[in-house]
Amino acid sequence: MKLQENLEKVSIPFDVYKVREDFPILKTTVRGNPLVYFDNAATTQKPISVIERIRKYYEQENSNVHRGVHYLSEIATKEFEAAREQVRKFINAEFKEEIIFTRGTTEAINLVANSFGKTFIGQGDEIIISEMEHHSNIVPWQLLCEETGAKLRVIPFDDNGELILDELEKFLNERTKLISIVHVSNSLGTVNPVKKIVEIAHSYAVPVLLDGAQSIMHQKIDVQDLGCDFFVFSGHKIYGPTGIGVLYGKKDLLEKMRPYQGGGDMIKSVTFQKTTYNDLPYKFEAGTPNIEGAIGLRAAIDYLNEIGLENIAQYENELLNYATEKLSQISNLKLIGTAKSKGPILSFILENIHPHDVGTILDYEGIAVRTGHHCTQPVMEHFKIPATTRASLSFYNTKEEVDRLVQGIQKVIKVFS
Ligand code: PLP
Image (spheres, rainbow, N blue to C red):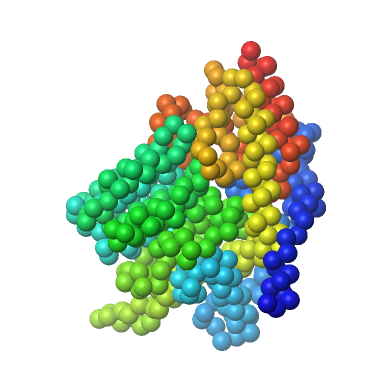
């Protein structure tokens, strides 16, 4: 083993206070209180290295990609394609052509629904999703079903927020064309047994899309090990910029799929008689891409690699356990989402207090949480509640911040008692 590989295997001690120095925004004060940012499932904050990389791009490298023969265009193209290669390595895809840049998770799912959907799904066919999907993994399939006459089947979950997998086997049949399922639920925190789901699906020759929007920042993703056919995520949730995301798809499937959008870059030649499409991945990247986004995403991945995803997973899990224990001690508080395997997401309700009031009072304390249905209305419907308060943690959060959340909640309870 080479020295570099050896060094990568050595776990660097994780120092949260040192890590916090990398995020300028964490020094913000809100109404006189130091900011506690617990809205990481909505979007994460950006380290200085990402911010500076984007600045460098505009100061020294800005140009359009793939088209120019001039100096700047060559640099921009090289950096854009290097970002693709870095994403490939990050999720261990086999080929660079399998990495398609999109606007985010939502666009990646819409791409698959429109392209895979309109290539392979027709009247009477079935698509399986689950009851805990984000709206962006429900509505694109509903739109497809409206257009094609296909049907949606929905795997339910139990009151802990765990999928009832027996139902999946009952749904699978020769009409099933795709399973599209969330890896980690954004409102319950449940980590779904996706490897098992892929195994079951493949035994029926059904491809699987994994919505990795909430898993990619918390654990090492290896798409070949997971065996999934598609994997999607957003840059802004892994400490990168907004407006950039990734669709990973197996090459043989992507090759058979029709383009999603038409325009520049996705063609080889255009005449009024016949247009031929470009090779992968460009067939799915019509128009000028988000160049700064891809380059910023690469910087975010470099940053995560430096910290180490194993360190991140271990620290976040410790923080989740600490927060779960502390919140569980508050009477009148009920956690929504108590699966055995969870990501660092805590959704809760307080008896007789609306989550919006909880969020507003916590904001006065400088604590940023999210309240609402979190784009998972069917999850709220399951528990017969309108909304939850959600604290979602990152490796830059601390136990002291969890303590401040607990004090804040106690203040809310006092105000309403
Ligand atoms: N899927 C899940 C599980 C999410 O949590 C989110 C965003 O919160 C999305 C999809 C949509 O991501 P984006 O808005 O970045 O496209």
